[in-house]
Image (cartoon, rainbow, N blue to C red; front, side, top):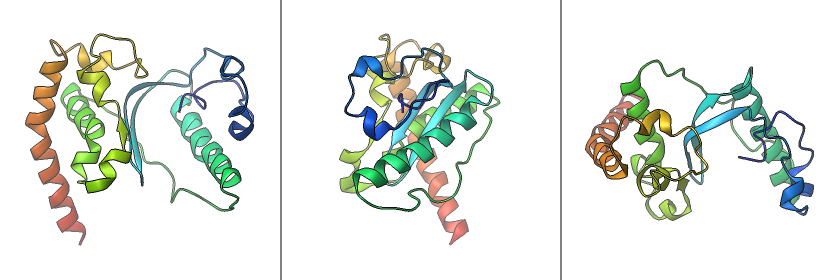
Length: 176
């Protein structure tokens, strides 16, 4: 994710994989700031803060196209990797942002991925265990400034998670 988050061209990430880390991503000019993320085996979620004009659009394009090229070359395959275009929603209120952060940080639990949970990665620890530390999610303060500490956020998340899961189940019923 960090590899694609730059205003400068990055070239091939497959070839960059073999280069010295110092040569990679020389630019400090970022397209987006990460608020939170969850990477599941079959999908991902981000809460992003746009830092450059059309930054989210550019970042998502780079991520989709660039990662597909990398994956295809590494696994000697062709074709698309992701289905459809990315979906985005503008967050207009703090309560929605807080609930969405729980949905993203605990997305593997929202979807009850079972044994695939261990293959998921999220910013959950950055919000709870590393509350004060500088981490990958440089923009997490947008949410965490409203909580006393990581335990306060954890309690909030655990309290709202059941209602998020219930709503997700209702959505499934309506679609089926």
